[in-house]
Image (cartoon, rainbow, N blue to C red; front, side, top):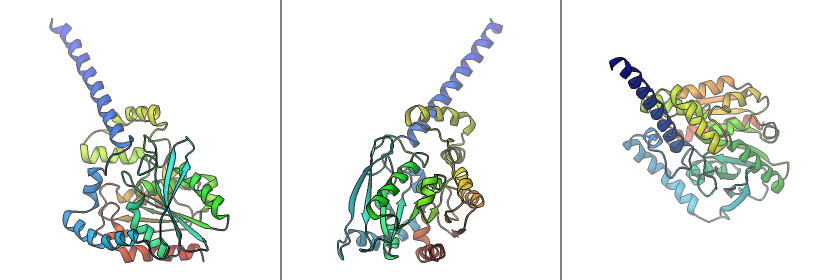
Length: 324
């Protein structure tokens, strides 16, 4: 009886292990790729500690007031276009004046939305840029059941660029700005030949290198789980339901193809959600005009609030070189 029971027990253990991996991979997929309901707690924890967050709230308050005021013809226009797969995409448009010479297309982060980029909207508007603040697919007012993590969003951005060209013509200079997932999207855009021809620069704040890379990092750091067991199964869910796998594309692949677009890389030194080594990898992969800045003491996506003057000054100097 003992000899017979050993294979049975082994088979049971294997079956339980397979079930555990399957369930865990399914949870990972639905926690990340399915349309989010609210900001992920893991991201909030990495933004700032409670004391710093209160400081940031004080700094953000005037920006929120500025956004809400409808003076000096500063009123946001709602724009809708159709993505390549047929879903409706939404963005807010704010002109800087009547000339329409420069446009900043702003990409928010995971579980965020267009107006969460208010700091960047105000900064670029005051620099003389028209601003197009996107709701990425499956976020804000844009449709979509599944998050694109840059792999799908780069082609959505191409449709926004085509919209800008059709409405404002070929003379308008376009830059892309992104934070976290939005920064990853902006960097992935440099791998699309048509986009490279149309944009003048990219500013990427705390970009990760690929969905697989960031999911694996979070699984190991926060949940102490082995990614090599869970990621292949999670990618099967993603391919079947969302139409892509987390390892289908990366910023490193895009930057290897980018031979024209200048890139500014930004990151916070205390970012534990997207580690700074990902920006270092992106920086090293970039073959064009490039610069970087690490903001000391800043957590994930909080560099503009930790050192707002330094942040904007770096952007201005970089763009002055781009357009010199």
